[in-house]
Length: 115
Image (cartoon, rainbow, N blue to C red; front, side, top):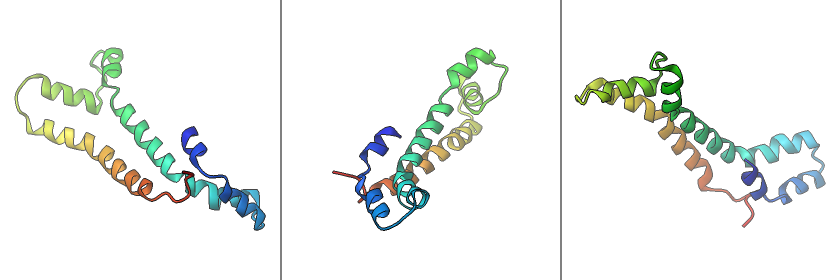
């Protein structure tokens, strides 16, 4: 988020203040919409990192805590092709893919970033 905030040109906030916008209005109408792609990308990375904590969950829970990654591992560990494992993998991958597509859409056109 720091890199996103540093990449935003301060001219837009200054122009809003010159035109009479209050600091709160500048925050809600100028700054936050410019930071939204970074917030979405940060949320995506946070989600992906949290879903990849299989090893930590498996080691600390000693296999007794059932999460989606540990369930998928137990389905694939036997070596047999199980259709439910494919479904679990799809369910685990879809939110990340959806967030990636949404963030890519927001990050594609960024006229407010300084070059």
